Amino acid sequence: MGRGQVLGTFQEAAEFSAAFGTDGEARLALPSAAPSAISTLVRAIYQRVDADDWIWAYGEGPDALATLSDACDRLPGLPAAFDGAGEEEAIALLALLAADSPPRGPRVLPPRSRLLLGGGLAGAVGCRLAWCAGPDDVARRVEAFRVRAGADLPFWTADRNLGIRFSVARSGASFKAHHPVIQEELLRRCEREGIDVV
Image 1 (cartoon, helix red, strand yellow):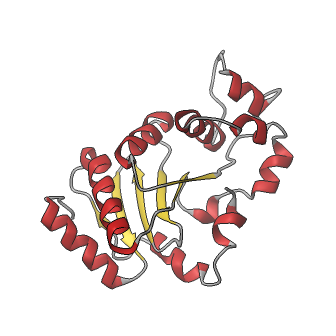
Image 2 (image 1 turned 180 degrees about the vertical axis):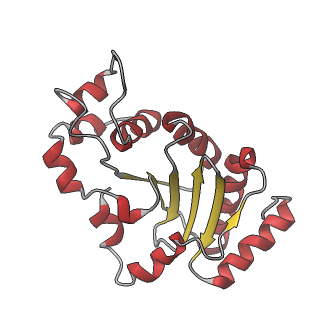
């Protein structure tokens, strides 16, 4: 998914994407607890409001995403590289695309990466795209995004309406809902589940 598919779908996208602001966000006290905490809260949101489509991407938020058409122009092999890719492969490709600079030194690229990048990495640097997944296996997905990116590349996930977002960076993990009532409910769920926030 590109920026148009994420932000262009909703008439009130600007309001919903306010969930990506830092005012009023809650930070997890233990960054190591991010996978299980995010999984617990995503499951709670799904049970409460049936939010079953979640967008995942590297970077700070949806405004940083490339458009899909621009990405395909820069990387003609992009559709073929993702076609039939498993989740781990797709996450690895998203991380490769999102890197702010090409990897240094000699590198043996797996077949999908070679298909995606063609003659080199220059066209891929900083090309952030998003991926959509359901509310299951969230803890494993958080770990996969973290492992593929390393500590320096942040990532986020948000419900399909961009009303609630979770973000993970070197400094820790946080969450915010665009509506204060939803944020308060998430904080109460944290208290019930023993998830420490600051």
